[in-house]
Length: 352
Length: 260
Image 1 (cartoon, rainbow over the protein chains, first blue to last red):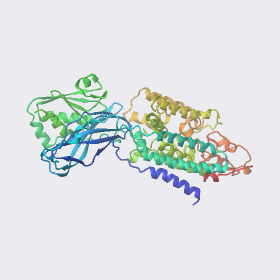
Image 2 (cartoon, rainbow over the protein chains, first blue to last red):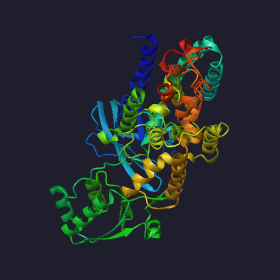
Image 3 (cartoon, rainbow over the protein chains, first blue to last red):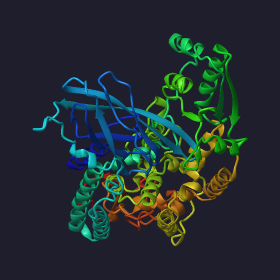
């Protein structure tokens, strides 16, 4: 094989094969990481964890909130105010209190934390619920000479969204490095006009530019950024909601709990004709109303009655989010269809 | 006829590669070496022009993009226009009048490239995509039939820009590639170093002009070596009865231009 063919084939393979680990994988919108992992807490005390969220998508994520799922090991915590917005490709953090009950067994354990946020592509918004595992090591309370437990030092730490601390404006070198790389490439291309020696230099130089560009680019996750940008218009590809909808049917357990509702509940379902998950939400609410006559509902098309959404509080960050189910007496809102069954039951059983 | 037949096969491959979405593959990390809309329902690759506009709008320094473009440029330069780009293939299929190129006008594509990048920076938006005729064929019209898009102003702008390009293509061979394509402008910068190139043996050239009359880009291959408008399609090599022109694949420093 001629060296030129070999070199070109190698280059082509490096370009297509090396970079193209053809994933087709569902792209996560937010990447969560919990630190410290595991967190060490004295029994009966409260400590804090830092949750760092990197937005891997080309659109902003809004209203990030955390909820502890019920567990039998006694781990929980006070809710903190939601993080309003994480810009495209930005990174933010939240400090969250973790409380351990007095009777939690010592040693390693874990609890589930649910992260709930909304993600909007133009006017289409989705609610995303993601489950995080928080690993906790429960240690024996430190005993002072007076026999009283010490105050945890972490109490002075401010909880809630970290202001400006993580927001990653990045170091300055990529800018200068990128400009330098483009300038070098330009000089090489001009050089290439003058005979074979300069062509040799230009060829080698361009190979270096390719290696540096792709290497640094992949290191900065720019290949994933490129993929996210390409996938934006394909809403089911970016993994925000399943494109295949579940069958609208209540489980036996849920049916029993809907039947047990003993007082009238009025619901309003917000929907839009372009919304792919709305039919499922509407069908589920209609089925619930059929199971128990005390549940009443009406459906509002947000395209036709945009003012209603504002009035009922289903607007977030200036965007109407559908599907949304509002319970009128408690003013609680349920967004999206992820884990619809359990969240709908929780909505019905509140304050009972 | 041999080269043209080979080229049709490779062009078909480029089309299949661009539309691999029919095989159920999602969006990949690959940047397409041509003007091919990533919003196309079947697209699995990222359009380089669309991507760079987004990166400029986000304020990202485009290392990955630069590396990929340099790689494609080094391999074939504008050879991708002639052999791979689906929109280039459309231009190719609508080739009827191989008129001589308007040289000053052919710098229009650099103006469009510069304008595209400046507009992306100024408006923080993908302005070029809103008038891109490739997007009309690959995104606007398909989404209209899929019921996602409606007949509105952006669609009409797309259709109008495609109509203008179409008329241009029918009157002038590869009208879009010659005068307007920003991706062609990018790849043309690499024409002098690319592995794929046109070799001229001047001692065998009789300056008969047969190659020029067959060139879809309207250039004179025997006079303008390594021209930024050459798409390396090989039409001229078939036209030459004296074997003075050859399409070759060799390392940049080994390419020869034999003086007469």
